[in-house]
Length: 216
Image 1 (cartoon, rainbow, N blue to C red):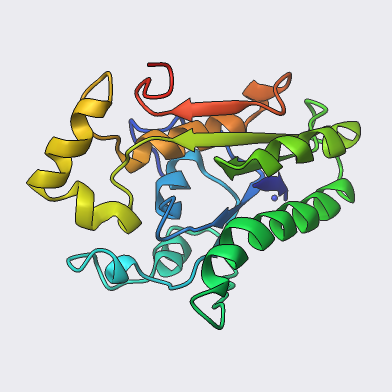
Image 2 (image 1 turned 90 degrees about the horizontal axis):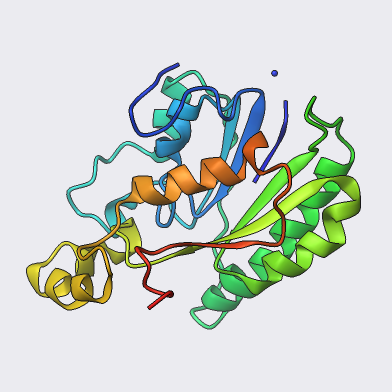
């Protein structure tokens, strides 16, 4: 998610695509590595996840917390963290209630802010959630773009135990038309695209980032 506010570059992302924007990343450690957005030069990044480091999923991961790396880059970053109380609450709190509340309060905040020069007011991006498409209709009157990313088999932290072993790669890789598994950068580049002025006429769309898995 991103909204208006006041460096480095790599080949992965074009520079300044998120300039003057704050990105709010839910699942900033285990799902979408928020550090991958830094080349797009967001003014700030808000990270939210169940833990500050990916070591829970990736034992060899640097112990430095994701938000600390982002702070060192010069970005502003508050770091909220939520911890559901029971195992039963975990999937409901994250996948249902969490998505609803994230969209609700993000939209409320974006509505109060000035539009960009392009006329777009803000961007909300969900991961494979039909709720994200419903929010698009509710928010269109305020020029808020709400789209959904549908990632395929990707080497994100929470799937590392499967995607990093030969047996897991051998089983999942052939499902993809391009063969092999996606990289976290594939998801972050699509997210930056959906949070940029390049999607001025796009809302309520579900964008597969899955090597054509759904198409087959």
